[in-house]
Image (cartoon, rainbow, N blue to C red; front, side, top):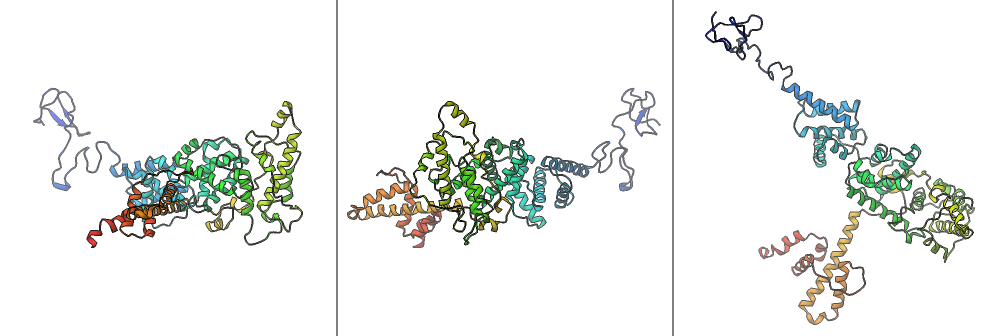
Length: 529
């Protein structure tokens, strides 16, 4: 039948539908008419459908619809994240099930979906007491850590789950075994470093250096410290980069660790010469002292040192042995000479186990005897050849087995057990220390402000108070030099003076809530009247 439409090629009106394909073809030239195969629906819903255009398809020749494509892409993204995070097997399936449960099988393709996958991975691993730091997940999914943290809270509240406490010891063990900087370390040395790191990590928990802080910077600080103890060359910047942690925070935690060890070292007889700069070289003595203290029992007089798991004869014999050559370091030749001047030398016998205790005097005696033996060996050596032989001797840290690893703090313990241990120092949280210093500083400023107010209101009584005022001002400024100097008054001093003039109590001013006090007593004073 002749069609009313002309052919696009020969312009003849001989276009008929093909019985096999349904396309319109020209009987004259045989040309297929493109875009002419659409057949409209006739007769409502029950009418015939088009040849290729059908309801619910994504286009010509499409196999999957939009929902199926979205689910496929989402599952592919989850598998990629699980591979990059090192999660496989049942744990990977748990993450997929949790994502499907939360999204009710719809999944997603927006920017929020990778954050949800990372949060579900963290919850699954944390629920099983497995360590997976948020910083590592944040680096893998390419999102900020605070967004990931908020999503973790939403996931936990949605599934009504209570996560166990974060295990910083597991984080340390995982970091030392997965960090590329420690890949070349032998297995024996790695096991030794793990025990030492767990011991120090428990000490940091006892000293509240992990309270309210992100755990990974503390892990980096302990990693670098134990590496220095075991002569493993690492760089704190490299380790922080490998564990996706800020370098500045890691340096701050490392400094806080050294400061705590210096405070412990002050209890030793030679501790007055130990500072942050040389505490690493003296760390074997400090850690050995902490280990001995942690193995002691409070309120009991121990009859023997074996209660702590140490052999006293072996300990003293290693320190006083004449057969081992000790290396002379350039930094310790002059400093160690001051320990020869002994004012009080306690007479303690090794065999008298009934009276022996772990005390400063005992360590002082061992150290002084060792230095005497060292001085005698040094006086008999002269000449270049002898100095060469002496430099070939064993290092003191290598020839003395100062680390025993028999303390309970070298294992994973509960918080209550850690707090019950004695490591020679009972420290308060750093935030509490800073608060006490700020409280003291504000109290001194209040005294100085009262003297200034008194000087203005009663000039006749300010004759003898001028020196005291200058002394308080210099104290508030925290000047180290002991001399009288003029101190500038800052904005805090003016606020304190205004609050004192409005008869605000000193106890309230010392708390430092200046904005609230100004709104309550100064700016609203007219309305209150």
